Length: 225
Image 1 (cartoon, rainbow, N blue to C red):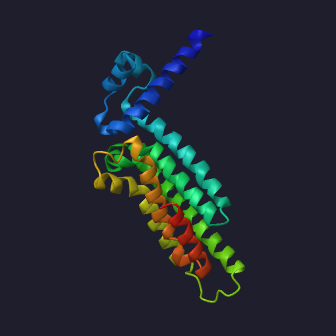
Image 2 (image 1 turned 45 degrees about the vertical axis):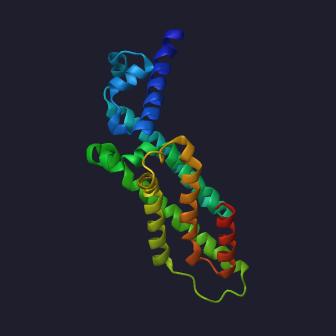
């Protein structure tokens, strides 16, 4: 029984160690020899479980893909600004958890066919989820605010706003890195980066809300400043 479980444990240890090293140093700066040395195993043992570093990267990407899909599906239940805030903050937390994918995105896209072909669908799913949140918030606030008379932006504007939010979600950590290359990707910077990013995206909801909704939005963002 033990001999059957050992390979699975070793494979998981390799994957989790690679994950931590990719996040800390960046995927291009981590070799399979570095991963093996950190685990005190032979490179051959690592290759037995993962024939190439790309296999490790793709396995982690697939985990992220599954977690993101579950989160975006849950965001369909957003009914108010508090829900929207929670959804956005959860998105940023997941992005931070897999930050090596975003830190080294251009490098990965140029050399990894699996990520190159899968990522556009993930971005499209993000955009669809954000469009749905915008539509729901606009409809809810319009029904609740009987004094609301000015038309909200139409579907085309919501589509553009959602695309802008996806851009921020995708490249926010790069922006943080430019501001502070020495510390931006360190664990101690996490909450600052996530709060700033979530607030920035949340403020983009403002044009799609009536006056009462914008006041509520301002109160929420101020509370998390």
